[in-house]
Length: 195
Image (cartoon, rainbow, N blue to C red; front, side):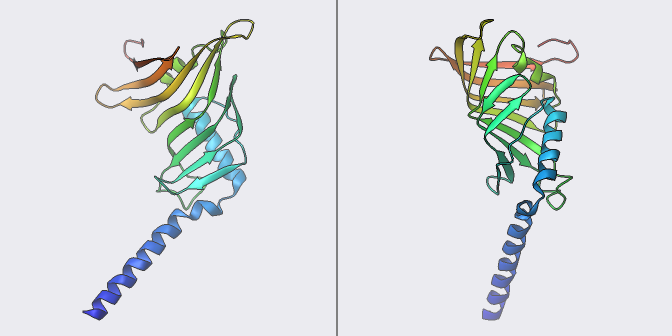
């Protein structure tokens, strides 16, 4: 029985080592190829052009993800904070084939004005059947023509996803404005072409 226990113990050690080795493969990726791939997927999935920072980190938990920090630029919206992209385990061996499963914007500052006031509504037009988008701990600055801040909308949690039951893209938001909390749910009805 001691020999059986020893074999089982060695088997589990080898299994754990193999799993951690597989999950650690992204540490060896070529940074430029990774940045290009992630940037292209963000452009394809969200129709947003990001200037991703070379300063990023890879994390194993809660599931494999890349976190991009520093100053970022998405279309006309200035933002600081981080973008976390969760990747599928299936293609970890192939950096050019990795697929983003979920995206999280954290501690971002969005500047909205007359040019891009419908930014959050336009995001509903994307295909969220393969991934979801979350925005957490962020602020939306609404500005007038003179570029003065009219008011700030605090975003505690905002999530875009595809509701398979309704077959509609959905936006759920938990926010605060003038220290008053509110919740909102929007659905994009493609058949009737209305929000």
